[in-house]
View 1 (cartoon, rainbow, N blue to C red):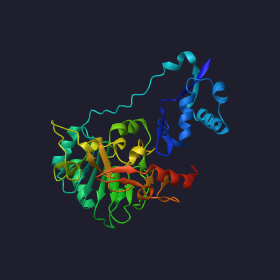
View 2: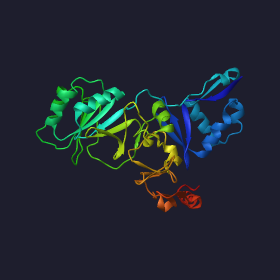
View 3: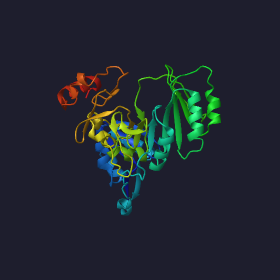
View 4: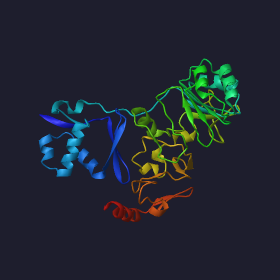
Length: 337
């Protein structure tokens, strides 16, 4: 006899208003209402016929969708318990994975330091393209870093950025810090927005990001900033990367420990560059409100969007609280729930 088995790599993540199905192998996701999670939890280990006999038409549609999407499959009952669970513990042997280097830094000191940590990715700020060319030729003409991006503060219309990238193949991207924030890439398939806009956070769906986000802040984790020759975890926060290395607390400010984010269905795919603030141990909040409100499942640019305050949600250095009744009234008005 065959029974139903849910694909372990399809993770069902509960948000405040709905659930999100993370398809980790294929890098996409699907949103559904909370009743869908109840359905998923109730069908494993049962036969298809016994499950279908107790479903309404909407639930049957979801069941067929799960099968067609390869989220759900049938296995012999004798092998049902033979499928191992995934270990989502994130580990790395490297103290640092990426670094932002300010234009005041001395690359002659900083680059060797980062190479010793196992750092893989660099973002370096230079005043001009000429300075960048000289410094890269001197310190980064041959490099073990996987990617190096540079930011030019003073744009000169005569600069030939495409020629620069051909001359310096270790550089992957150039970003111009002016109103357009235009970028140039050494890879022709990579494209960038021509303007800095306030939009949705960056979403990345894969096993590594999912695992890392369980216990870490995926934007700040293993990232350090250099001003002069001194490393920081964030602006003004010292970070030692020598043999007495100690993880900065911000690296561990996961979404599950952060106000609002902990109730968001996108929390294990969101690469959020807002700096979290620690209220107390294992409690974090943001001074800046996100573009997405998980309590009503609305983006800022969508019709009938409401701010957190309008929903009765308070998050600051003193407290985190939310008004369930008020949120329920708003959702009933928006969604008929």
